[in-house]
Length: 503
Ligand code: C2O
Ligand code: CU
Ligand code: CU
Image (cartoon, rainbow, N blue to C red; front, side):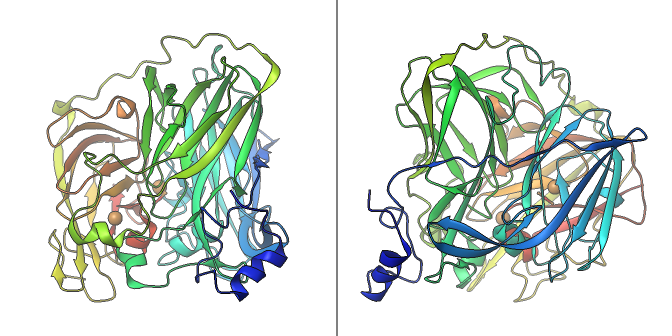
């Protein structure tokens, strides 16, 4: 590794032409030495007459990711990212979101089961200098969720600049004895994002066509906004709340020494039993709760490496060339066990019960074909139909997202089977608002073990058809829609999204 990147040699390198437009780059510009992992503050709400109130303010700020280099960013209650929201099942909550930035924005609670009006999708616009309130009762299993901007056409740009944060939703099972649950001590948020920086330290966003087609990938990794982070662990077992909050990059996470870890949560819920794994693949918006055992006293370095050559999620054909540096290795986070660390109890063998929703409960099947148009023409799906034009190269069932079009109508309290068909050359992480689903199968084969719980986002590889089953309970509103979309934010912003109402 190299010397620390002071402003002086930072500019020096640029001046002597060692730097390309993306500066600094992983592998040479990354400062030597590690930085303590930033832990976002915890916002647990203030109880007033039986309701928990949370105040979030979107703001502009200046962040110092590199020593002495200022980067203009967006954040909530801070310069970059937002606090971790702690919610409990059955809480009545009121989230007050103030927009103190100079652009229109929205704030969406990704994975939460809430009324459409409280969802924070593209229709719940928050104009500058106004406040939007989301009121709801938490009615779901504990898990790891997140919140982020969801502004029509601007989601990628706003999330990239920092408008997102983690949500830890607890219930009796997520806090059961044996599961590390002390925030910032043995229960650690790990928000993974990739960035590109301009010479002046500002964030670089979409610069060329392929940043939209393949989705925007950076060359520098941040965890909770920290470059090259380490965490000093004072307990034998540590729970990591992994969140891929990147715009487009998929991570294949493992430990450098190939140690195994226990996956205990899929984001939407706990897994029924801990699942021992050596690596886990997280697409944008996917989460996983894992337990790392540090008993051997050695540093545990979490890394991201290229997908194996037989991965069903690898891009094909010309898309493979378009995905800049998707095969690059990154250091993500080093866990450093401290001398005299506290012992931790054994993990419970049974975490929760997941009863599988039966296919026979579905009253109907809906089919969603993902489509993208490349420069030369169709790359799959039924793109080119209504609503398609050159400025919206992405579609679902041939239609690009339009605010005034409701694409689907679902009956309240019904169970439906959704079939996502991907005939394009790349993987798309498909996400549905309103609640959680169970994956039935992927090209007829059972889902991966870490997917055998509740999820709201699922990887659909090129050439794959994924089927999931979902209950649309509790809320109906003929006038306010929920979204379904690809969670590669440049795809979402450019048409790969649709709207449904529950009536
Ligand atoms: Cu993570 Cu429609 O959102
Ligand atoms: Cu969502
Ligand atoms: Cu996509």
